[in-house]
Amino acid sequence: MNYETSPTGNNGRVSSDEVSSDEVSSDEVSNGEVSDAALRLQRRYPGRRIPWPLMIIIVALGATAALSWLIWAALVYARPQVVAQVASYTVVSDQKVKITITVDRRNPALPARCRVIAQAPDFQPVAEQQVEIPATAARVVNVPITLTTLRRSTSASVKGCTSG
Image (cartoon, rainbow, N blue to C red; front, side):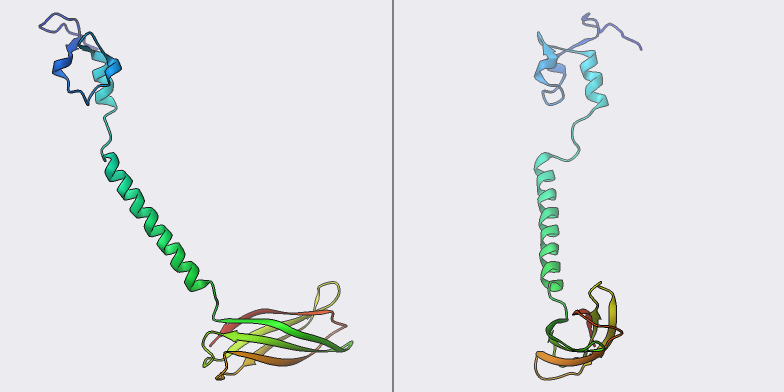
């Protein structure tokens, strides 16, 4: 490194009137002079390229956009096209159960398809059936189903529904 003596003779130090106040902090100035090391550090680590008010506006706009998308996605996808649940369940025999499912569709003009399973006490599936629900005028319909099981069933559930 080459440390030359300035023409003013203050050995590598620059007077404070040669440096703007926003380039160097006040603790680096002593007796009206700024050290050469402070200037080198200032050049090595320059100030922010984006001013704070602009950065705050950019972050606020980004957060607003993300929150708006989250609310939109939650509202659109919170309720599926078709929802079904078991309304009643009756064991007729060791090989037969009667199930009634309640199907709720957003658009009742579209047919739906639901998968219904019956389970044994050890939670193993003992019967499964794909049930077609035709298009109707009513949004909510009850659909009776009779399943033939491999062994005695103790519960039934709807595993999923699709529309169209």
